[in-house]
Image 1: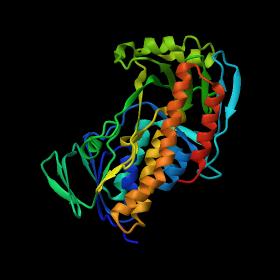
Image 2: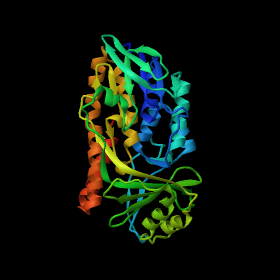
Image 3: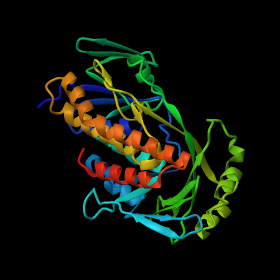
Image 4: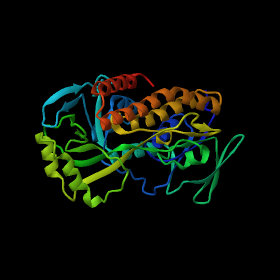
Length: 376
């Protein structure tokens, strides 16, 4: 069936937007991506990825590039702060029998892989450009850009992130991002030989871990409870992160602590979440990814569900008789899965903050992993 939307604009060139461009171009549709950053940059350290994300990479056609430039392995090792191992979390091989069940990669590296695939798809990318007005009419959306140009599209996809301007324009009453009471620290460090897969040390109030992102690098992550969402001077990052690691006497954690200095690549981020109740579209403008379901990293699935949005939206546009039907069916397929990830991740954070039931924490992780293993 011919897609009811032949000419599509994607506002936002992040992971979800690029994935949408790649999948829609496979149908031969005219696709433009408007990205406000003239450098098309991606910030951050490493990103952990589960089997469902690797399965999505396979669908996009970028799994081979990820395997060459990132790191993949089976299982996650869990330890007490002094180093005693307490469990191994299994990670089912969802992307195929030959592909490990999880992995990690540097965010800028993954962004470059997706950007290269977006360009190779034939999508037109407009950098340093975004919209100033969206005017809907019977057959589409008239978009005015910051460069003064005005164009018409059959469909506009808002993929401009947590603080989406598209969401603000078309769903002004939608809920807003909420701070969760936790923050995460990340740092890129040399990878010791013994770090073969994700490893996590669980303390009474602080959780830390490492995950390989390439053959010679890993990223360190530390989750900290912090009642107030306050700015921190980057000059304090190294000393504050070092202090958080002090209670973890495990040799590898102390090795990480010793490696931190003022030149270390450290990222601090307060954790926010967002779940917008459906509908996620208004007329011929639809929202995907963090614009409607931004999650904390507790299930390592934020990028996953955003990329899955793109895949499902492309599938529905390829089979529906109308744009409205495609968007309604897209939302029906995505709601429960995305709600589960956002709410379950948020609940894990609540349990960690309050020192709640560890059995509930473990059960939520198991149930969520099992649900994510199901086809999208």
